[in-house]
Image (cartoon, rainbow, N blue to C red; front, top):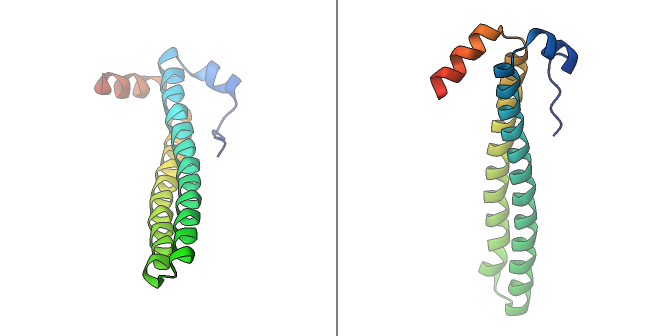
Length: 112
């Protein structure tokens, strides 16, 4: 998911300080990591569901055939959680682009 901040890079450079730009870099890295993890979860879900389905068909066991459904639902929930977090960080990114530099300095000082 591409991050689309509230202002252009030129506007952020004009209104922003190095602290603000660094904070935006941190947030963008978190958002990219969340998107990558979400993609990996989907890959694991497909692999696991395919493998369990193939195993269930060869064994002709209905209980084993239910396992791919359960694992798919678990991965679906985990992916939904990561998507929710990613959207929250995108909203935070948008809010930071609109903040005054003084407030960003205070936030970074509190974290460090």
